[in-house]
Each structure stands twice: as C-alpha cells, then as structure tokens.
Image (tube, rainbow, N blue to C red; front, top):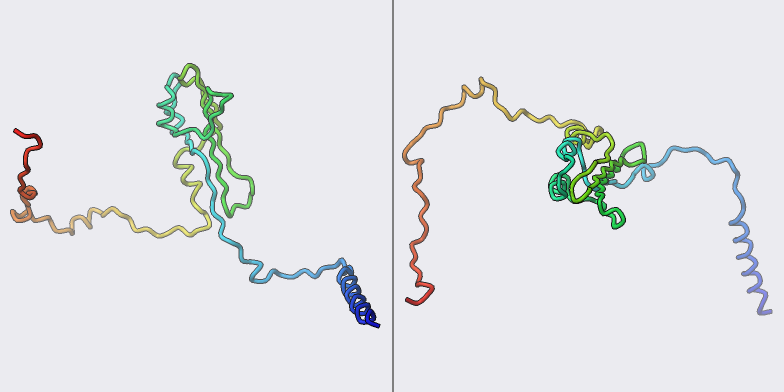
Length: 185
C-alpha cells in the first residue's frame, strides 16, 4: 500500500517528460522581431598592427639600415627566428558595422641582406589621406564645422592692437637667495 502513491507520482512524471518530447508541427509562423531582438550590443572597430601607407613606403630605399627602417615604419609586428632577414608589418582592420565580415588585411615585408634593405614586398597601399578617409564612419552625419580662418572683410573690422609701455613686462625675477658654498674653502 505504501508504494501506490509513489507509483502514481512516478507515472505522472514519466507522462510529463514524454509529453515534453512531443514533436511540434514543422510550419513555424513568421513574425517580425520584437524590440529586444532588435537591440544589439555596441561593437568596436578592431585595428591591429602597423599601418604602412604608400607615403611611408616611398621613404624606404634599398641599402637603408634596419634602424632607419624602424624609425620610419615602427617596430615590425612579426620577426621570425627562421627568417631573421625579414620584417613583416601587418595591419588588420575589422569594421564593426560592415556588411562584409572579412577584415581588411595589409601586409608589407621588408627583406634585409647584411643589415641593409635588399627589397620590399607590398600590395598596392593607400596613401595616408585615403587611409584616413576610409576610417571615417560613412553612416554618421557630417558635422557642420564653421571655418577657422577669417575673411579679409572680417580682418579689416578688427581693431588694431595698441602697444603700451605697461604691457611690456620686465624680465621675471626670482627670489634672491644665497647659499653656502658646497665645498669648504
């Protein structure tokens, strides 16, 4: 008699588990996403490595020592033990809101022989102006910035500066102090 309530309870649990595994119809109603599904977290643009522009690469000439290359391009991102005479400058950029998921990758290799530049392997690189223009978010509205320079008519309206003797300050004077000699006399 004691086992009857236990059997009925285990039977109810078994039916509930079997009912939970029942298949649902294959047709799913299409609906518009709700507000919470439309919210996405903020994603940051990811940029890694050395940016090497066409202008910088034009400064590198064959016969240039390693130190001069480092001064112009910065420290290489990759130095390999097996290729000690090769420096790799790699730049990878992933735009957060871009439609294409593939990141931009630019790789420049500088090959050395006897401590000086022998040759450079590089793709078609952007100029500095093109690179900066490509980093601007095209979706953001362009801010209206007033011009910083004055026109000739505005300059003519400005008053001329007045020079007075009181405006000229004397040379700064520090506190008059005397110190004992450092060495005994």
